[in-house]
Length: 351
Length: 243
Ligand SMILES: Nc1ncnc2c1ncn2[C@@H]1O[C@H](COP(=O)(O)OP(=O)(O)OP(=O)(O)O)[C@@H](O)[C@H]1O
Ligand SMILES: [Mg+2]
Image 1 (cartoon, protein in one colour):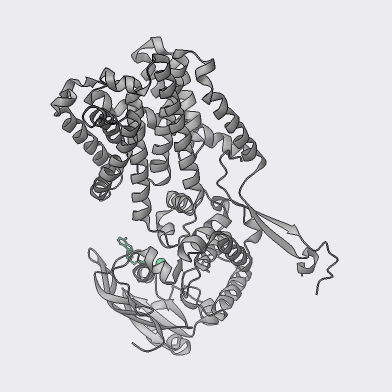
Image 2: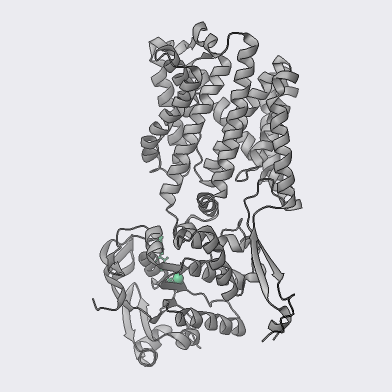
């Protein structure tokens, strides 16, 4: 009855909003400013920023895996440590350049994650989590056996390898900072474009209902496998970069469940799991807390725990979840918007 | 199997411990038909859909679709072959918009390229009366809208066989009428339909063949008027449906 009052509707679909365009422009500017850091920041700030970038990378990857694909792993330290150890092994015994070694560590991690996935994907829920942790422990115990890499007490990166990065100390520090920045830009870009693609749509569907997703043509097992392999590969690269910053490795540091998993989960959960913005907010908050309470020792860990509990109770969707609920915005445009415009402006008089 | 049979379920059985949800079930559906399925609560109707679509795997027997043995294939594969279902308990992707919900089926199930997928989803949302809600998150939809979304998502995969599980349950009479019209339209466009429904008059409005299930067994199959007249069916339905 009201069909002819509506006129002819023209439907268009867009994927960005004013907020997301502004956010993209600002992040490009921020990226340029950050790329310039070696010329404006001090040594300590650069170290801290580099560490922050690598943590943000780990958090985004874990969020992709756990928050979207539902693979709640507590064992990604397996690939952090593997990447770190491969950096040492490939440079010390293979004579590779550290950057080449780090990239190759990613390839190795991808290949190793395949059989691991086939094994642990048989487990579900808590058993899956425990399985990932057991695998990481196996990695740790295996590397502790390798005497040429220092066994249980670890080893330092030989001075010759360190010098091959850059001759001067400041040159090395700038390079390792840029590598960390490059890694976080790549990781965030990868996660964003992955989530924006057809595969990302599938993953978001899996996040909300596996039964529904399967019956709409999504191969759940393969989607999860892909995510597991990609995130493990990039986690291996990040692990290599972490230990390129540290210049020293030991099994306990490389496969530390608190450093590479507990803190990462804290970051993602307080920031907002299953959102791209959450890990960014979480990482910032984590570093603010850590730096402002550096003198408190173990009390700091208790405060972290308290913060996590309060946020989980008050905002189960994390800080970004709260913001999104209030303002309905997204900085990384993943959504589709349907617009209908009245196209009957050219004097069409309805049949 | 006959030339025109689209779906052929042969001797399919499935048990959960002592509960037999399918007991040597046979079912043949020809292309272009609308088949209605009746049966009391717990008869195994939804389980039969789960077996057909691959949400459950059969303990024994075979399922054939478009000439392919699909008994051991997964749900995603069967969807891509042209099967789609609506869930009795809606399974919306609550964090995604209505448009995005249907886009999942268009890009994955139907395998459409982005622009074709967008256009197809727009036409599906138009046909199911959800266009005005396209940008709304599925988590906030009303019951009727959730049922429509189930239909829209199934249609977004461009199915040749559509399985509807109690899609009219809980609707008012006028809502039910408009749903029947939508389903008739889908059938007119050449889609074969199997429809589970307790609301018998809705089924009778479109079904050309009826099947009655009880305790995982097909206890009657045939023309709707014959089935509705049968004493056995009336007994089973006593107290379940007094329409
Ligand atoms: N995954 C499962 N595990 C154990 N028992 C199940 C499972 N799924 C279904 N059942 C049981 O199988 C029987 C048939 O269930 P089904 O959902 O197929 O019935 P239905 O005919 O669809 O009933 P309704 O009309 O209530 O929807 C019920 O007794 C149910 O409890
Ligand atoms: Mg049912």
